[in-house]
Figure 1 (cartoon, rainbow, N blue to C red):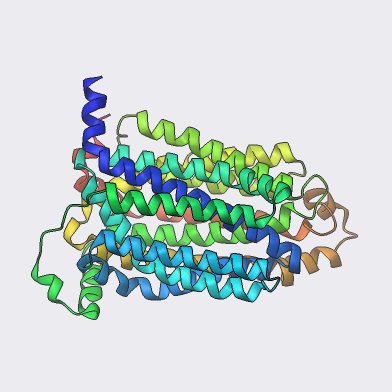
Figure 2: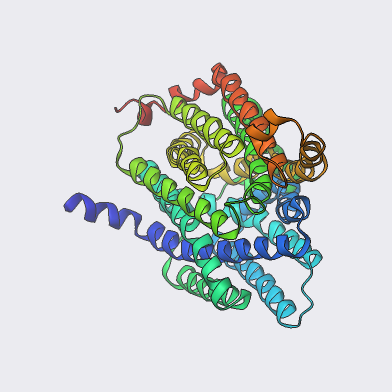
Length: 439
């Protein structure tokens, strides 16, 4: 009991921030899911729907390398409040356009681009804030709790969004989003005290000079750089998956909106179980091995079952295998990065990380939508008379997306095998010896 009370006191500010921001993230995720359903119903195109994510990530990736320099110098609380407020105003704009009957998918592209721009500053500020609010010996627990919160969001958002959409419409989903934003805004404003960082002469650097400082750190610490490139290759696979999933599930027999919601909910439950495990398990002997094996399990199982499975239970088994180890990966990755990168330069390095690690997400979203619409679906339609292809991937709309998932699976396994042999990534464990040799 004393240990729990002590841990709560140490993490009080972090926990208030985590809980309230997670409720806000739940509202935002519900709106995003509802708008994906709305956009697919409007145009029926995997590429057009995937462009929603592309528009979010392009400004985020392009500007992130500079935003961390600002984040290191700006007040963290003010930065997060302003960026969250801008996102809320964009949601209000969606609501106004929808109620006026003038909402178009092009409006969503523009609004998502604005939100992506705000995230370029907000995300590194939030990353550094977690470090400032968390004692070093609590990093793994904090990472596990963040994974737990993300799992709950992933689990609940599709169910709640689908239910509200069916019962009350899109306006009700957006109203929940705005309510959770208001609660998170007030909690951060009034109840979370973020410690000030020590001032250094780096704060007098220009934005370009500070961005170069982040790049210099990565060039001098190639293990961190290679780890980020590994995750960039994984994100390419994951974003192609995200773009192709609605096209795989929505149009096929046994699929539809309810099936897509169930799959996302099962994935959330799997992440919830993985988060609980990450929060109670002792530190592993090898954090790098956990990261590599978790990603290998994730990429090598769900994609194959989505490719070759034709029923909802099989897809749900894939969702469990694909997501249950992700929180373990995230928690160990979080410890490696936070314990390796000095806090005074984390904003700079994390912003460069965001550019290097996440630039493949818009590429993958566009590529996944394009491959479904222009390559795999037409190819499967042209080869509809080939019996073995129909047995493997089914027939009709959705079969091309199934074939693409098999390609994703092969690519994902190959990436994990190649980067697992990178000695510079394994060398990070020697720097993390205080965390990685307890078990």
